[in-house]
Amino acid sequence: MSPRPTPSPTPRGARTHRRQPRSRLRGWARHHRLMCQDSAWRLFRAPVGSLLTMLAIAIALVLPAALWLTLDSAQLLDAELEESATLTVYLAAQVEEAQAVRIDEALAAHEGVANTRLITAAEGMAEFQQALGLTDALGSLDTNPLPASIVVTPREPEPQAMRVLGESLEQVNGVDEVRLDLAWVERLRHLGELGRRVALALGVLFGGGVLLVVGNTIRLAVESRRQEIEVVTLIGATHAFVRRPFLYSGAWYGLGGGLIAWGLLALGGEWLAAPVATLAASYGASFSLPHLGPGGSAILVGCSILLGWLGAWIAVSRHLASIRPR
Amino acid sequence: MIDFEHVGKRYGGRFEALANIDFRVRRGEMVFLTGHSGAGKSSLLRLIMRLERPSRGRVLVAGHDIARLHASQVPFYRRQIGVVFQDHQLLFDRSIYHNVALPLDIQGVEPREAARRVRAALDKVGLLHREKALPIELSGGEQQRVGIARAVVNKPSLLLADEPTGNLDPQLSADIMTLFEDFNRIGTTVMIASHDLALIARLHHRILRLRDGRLVADEVAA
Image (spheres, rainbow over the protein chains, first blue to last red):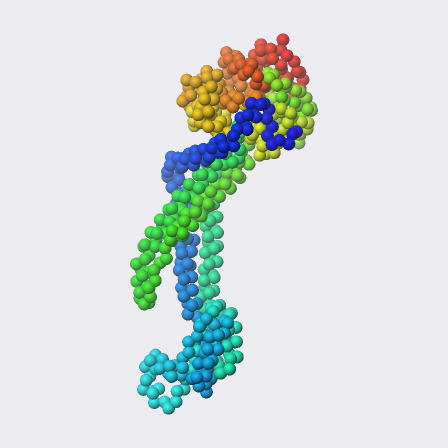
């Protein structure tokens, strides 16, 4: 009836229970070490089964990881394209060059503008001639029909922000028209968003798959050690004590699966590298497949270990409730 | 040491395993619990081990109402009780030594200290020379002695035994009971459930007799 946490039937019992905290901590650490070794040893004693479980985990991890990598590189591309997103401001035809320079300065001072580049009417003509190779035909014109223009790079390459900026620039005196081509930026954006969502959904699904694979393996392990669990529970083992070896098994499975997944990704990257390079070269671009850096590898293996541990935890906890000493 | 205050236990709301059980066991006593099978002996022991809670009344061990223990405290409570099972509940995948060391492993006792206590317990039951053997290599009587060594390795103040001589011949049974008497002599409270009436009668200890879940006699064998 006393509020003390642990009743002690005898002075002797009390003494064993109130051991030095340091010695209890050492005992706890020792059990962790022992269980870590023991669970690894159990995996080694059943190599085929362990390897199959790890392979299943690896395969479940490879697909979302590969998609993640691809998206990562697409995002790089996306960022590059957004950097080149600009507005073209056409000045009215009667604007003189000196006035154009003033307008250019005014636009550059606008808060939404990162920088500007003035293309005078003459420069525009030169560019046009060069691009089209129409030197003769255009040279025969008496007057330059092209207006001066200013290429504006916005501070924020967001489509909505660019639209607002375009409208505000159109109000500037001497500006005839503002053109912005946003369709491709938006399309790419939507594609990227779609890809990210698909990757996330796949990641969640396959992560769930890893939980199931590990959970099922651990469930069988728990079942095969049912008597041991009953006995240690009867003589005073805590849930944490009973759970510990299985959690380590789950973490080991996760580590093995993560490493195999890493190996598969590296192998796949190696295998695809040559055709991708050839393909990119044919477009006159240099593009290489992204690969997991040290950080990405750590995240992959870490997630795998965490999933293994979590799967084991769920399986053991569900099972412990059903194992009651007879 | 053990106080039963008008304890009743029902299973599934209908079957009444124990009804109005009221007795007290003093510290250092040795008590037999007897009755035909199904009389409620095991249910009573399960209540003391806090594997179950009474439906009615209170069970006090060392003055504590054990029904009030929080689930997280129950393991620590059980560490203070030594239990011997009829089927010994040894783990067959490890040696005698590691079976006996199990309660100490659970408590994180240091290996050197654990080894000392395991050997002392095995010595007491006369099996020190078999510490490296596997349980399967031992006879039924020896296995039961290993079970007893495991129950006492932690020096519990309360020792419970459920039909410890269930499968043994009379001579071995008598040896086992002598072992329990030895532990009782050094101050351990001992409670043994047994239906071996002839054996119990010869030992001159207090006997609690159960019939159909009721305590029908509380006497000392003449």
